[in-house]
Image (cartoon, rainbow, N blue to C red; front, side, top):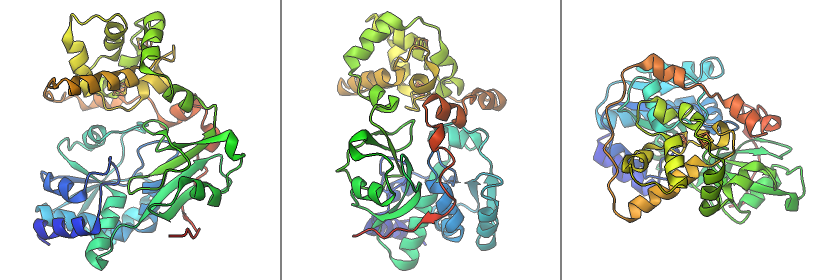
Length: 370
Ligand code: SF4
Ligand code: SF4
């Protein structure tokens, strides 16, 4: 199928990139430079949406990739998949589409952004196609099926954690009730997305085309506490508690990739309102928002990511141009070594261990009302 025809079809079906803020899939395709990396491994701890989906529908996921590759004129595809747990899915994918190359995630980087995922696979220019996006593309082409449902990991204080298939528009409250909440409603809150890059949600919010996971947690969990601190308070705390130890920079994946971002310098300059070196602020725009600095690295429980996000917003509002991306460093082993924070370390540090590994490798059967 030609890219123009595929684009129109995906637009009609309302297919969006399941791994982003909902970028339309057709726009993503048009930006495709020719290398497409199918991501079948979830990006954050506790989430299993991509892995369960791939396990259940490997043929359709592979077919989605094949359709994309044909449309953009590429002849082979890369698939990021976990060895062992997803071996059977890989074999079934090969049986329908033999021109696939599989790559194992080098590290279990707990909030892998697109650049890390592409760089791990040694294809820094690749467009990342999420497993669910590929699945939706295959269904749209084969059945002209519009996107009216979503696969969502439901985890946390839940009797039946798992990956649920629900209609879009389902209230989070209803989904959590079906999954059997284990604590009274007034003792828990809902977290939307993964623990690293997600945000506090509300019960009245609904499942959208980009809802990959929801985690039900006690109201006083640190994720909610940290997310609720105003920027002005974060700045005051940074001014009094940041000792410039540099651990946030040491563990920052973007810094490890060779970008000139230095969150410890940013924190010092922001807290002291020292604008003598604008590059400290401008370079913070290389931040991916992964959250490692504030959810894991900082011994003082400070919030470099949140403050960087705040400053980046202000730069954007003022129309200040962010620096162009510099060439990536060539040292792959240094890059791989730098991805030293593993998912289970994050899970322990955030007090989420009791919820980890509880999602079964199958779809939870529950009928939700449309
Ligand atoms: S969130 Fe923190 S650790 Fe992650 S890229 Fe941004 S500055 Fe670095
Ligand atoms: S890790 Fe925390 S205390 Fe250390 S430099 Fe970074 S923000 Fe400051």
